[in-house]
Length: 175
Image (cartoon, rainbow, N blue to C red):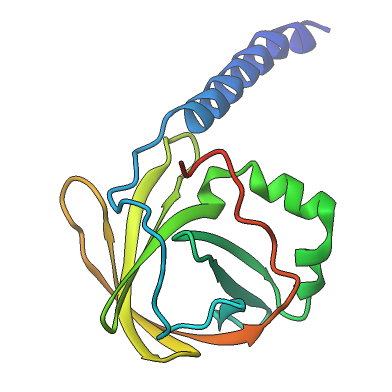
């Protein structure tokens, strides 16, 4: 019986720690360094999404919008119907890490969004690469938006897939 009473304060402390970390992660974040600007180019198709298969079962997806906003998600390969599921879309729309901005300058593309580690504020990062054609781009480096650049070489090729029922770009994180 005494063991149960000893565990109660420990459990309460863990709960308090978890709640405070959740507040920290949800309330603090770095701003984005790239200003959102409308995409007026024709060197990338935006009537669908770009995807990269990063392991045997998952794909990374970027939806790019005319207003310069990007929406990103990682999903199981073959589960693209999630983009049509209003419950799933509602849940991910509330996640600031799913939203960002992109900038195209000639054949260079920069995608900026946020990510967080457990119990840390969201940090902004940029993935940069080259547009190979209107249906393919290759990301070659990733770096922090603020502080020490911490440039990391990457090699991710994103291919276009037409998708006429693209989710709306409306969100509360990108003005």
